[in-house]
Image (tube, rainbow, N blue to C red; front, side, top):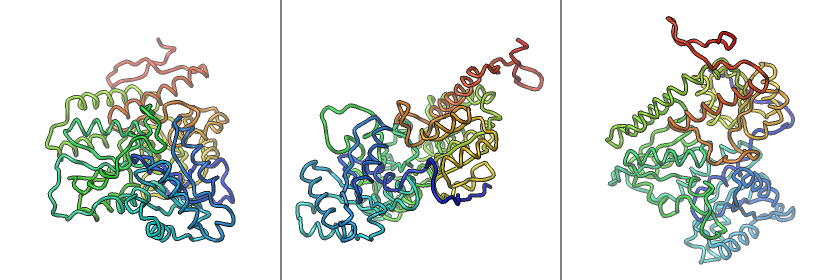
Length: 460
């Protein structure tokens, strides 16, 4: 069991975490025709917008209530009212998602009260969904903002259903964590449909941020799950939550509609996907399709091929808790030693990370621990590139933001196929590093009485 500690530094150096309101806005981007709105200063929104645009290389819709110093002191009602009216009149959104920021939380704006008053004064807004989530950026992190926002979507947008109501046995709700990419969601959708199931993703980033070019410009999100579909999620037979962060939303769904849920804390690795496939076979009444039996064999072979390169590696990883738990668990199963671990916020999964200590800190902490423990593989988002350069070790980019490489939205780690490709990417990264440093690569094997062994290159 890992010991979870918190950094006591007076300030963050090269921050690892992104803020709560950014995580909340990210969740709203998985809804069709949505306009995320940050209740705060213009800088709060412009910073987050820059991160999203650099990560996805796409136009991203975000708006702000543009709080000034005076408005912050006197109260932000007029700013919220004007922002909602302008968005409604100019962009015609299907839903406006509002996240608070640190400055308005410190003032204590009653945004729920603002919304009730705005609806009274402007009857044309009566049917426009307005979802507000409290996400102060002076506490918690990106994952927390996503978690709270998805849970709030369920509480506000899903129609209540009696526990004994008739349900569609083929319909399944999927509540994905923020650590899953649009590519991951596409893979999950394919898997579920191959079992004859009809999935509804909340949020559905694969519909809005998968990099497709729309037929015509729209100022709101260009895809994702619609408000009408969210309202009927209570008619589903099951809810599948992916990542410990989604337990809260799954419990809210069950309390509101009576739909039972199954939580999968990770979907990267052989055993987690065996459990996932078995569950889908059980609820669908169908055997596991032959294509996934073959993919399982491919993953097992990939693990065998790559463990010569990954096994024994000393891993340094910095990520949001669920992504950290996902990747570090899979690599531990591959024989890597999880030595330096830094995360952004508290989570129940952190104590089960296969290491001695998990620190809630920043990238400076990660670099110092990686150096002290002589780590030779670093995994974190793009802000860790300088640390990897100073440490002179292979660097794999994972998480948000990833702004110095293309295809961040299509990176995949779920399912047998996603795990297989991730293992190959990591092993090839290690091989390339060996070649760059003129080190021998263990690329030849022989069978002996004791099993499969590496033949040192000098014995070829």
